[in-house]
Length: 119
Length: 107
Image (cartoon, rainbow over all chains, first blue to last red; front, side):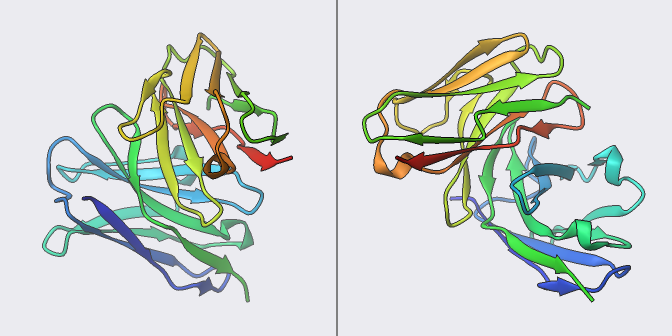
């Protein structure tokens, strides 16, 4: 069974970077042809797809975040990471990691981690 | 970006009732449309992919349909565990975008 688990800082100060880790068990993040994504849910329920890192390490970001976002991975630990720079209060959200399968839907999600941007 | 408009944003309904949630795209999305359910504890799971294909393990009371810009999710007879948030999501073009959500509430 594929399991994803996010871990994050809980609270981040404005202008600082936000970093969240997704630990994956039960499936290798290097297995073809799966994509490992970050999605966030804002207060008020809007969902935003942020970007992915693929099984072969290629990366694709939502253009709205392209200047601030970085997604990386550690294949030895079967983890992937989100870094969002220069955060504001508008980045307060629940951050989810999710797997995109070869039918192009998000088939497994983590439970999410709440990150609040506040001074 | 393709805008996804879901209606209604909230829906009071009764056990056993048949309900339909609508999702309209700002341009044609060629059936590249998925549906997800979010439970009150925050967990999210897929229900329907590519407009009408049922995810493994999802009860057959869920169904999806549509074409062009207009899509819908139907629950034929509401069970207690169906009271949750529902989202549509398009993958016709990047960035992939979600509808604003529909909260299904017990009447």
